[in-house]
Length: 238
Image 1 (cartoon, helix red, strand yellow):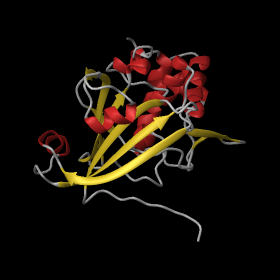
Image 2 (tube, rainbow, N blue to C red):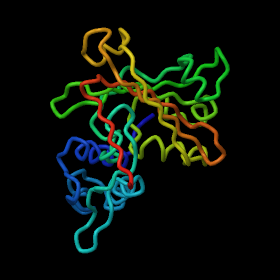
Image 3 (cartoon, rainbow, N blue to C red):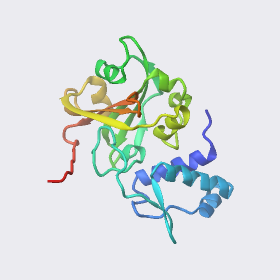
Image 4 (cartoon, helix red, strand yellow):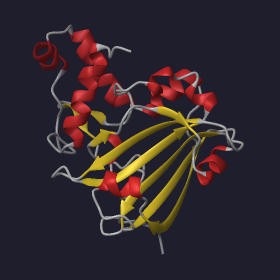
């Protein structure tokens, strides 16, 4: 499925922000500047900015324009749980292969409420550190009732508006509660290959499940991070 021009512009800006080229608090190019740079109408450029604004990546600042948000608004599966903005999982990533239908691991199937043998749509990505080395590998599993009515989840092209907003638009369902379970184990052969570490390296595994207002699962993500890179930060009143 072809990516629309405004989605391409939004994804380009999102990638620059994730890579640190546009820092939190910095102003993104104006609609006029984007229109000139991309040779599109100003309306198309403004629509691209609206995608980022609606997804919480940028906010309007009077007299300045749109600036990159500094507020943590989502949890990046497998990486730091605090202090990361909702931009491509908090850091740049590489998509691994093409999305496919497969039977998920038992704990993922249980989180999604799937019976044994039921397949779900799998999307795999590797989150990267600033120098390009792997930080975490993440498998996102979408249950059939979500994936079948959200065809772009099965496409290799990026979803510029973000999967959460796209699923909400397709299904009318959005996340109301998240459940995170962190465990430790040794990396599998596949995980070790994705993370470029020796097999059986100790890893932290963050299983994140998002539920809608009715308590039905929308997605289950399993993020795997080498123990040397995993950090969980919790802040609470005392």
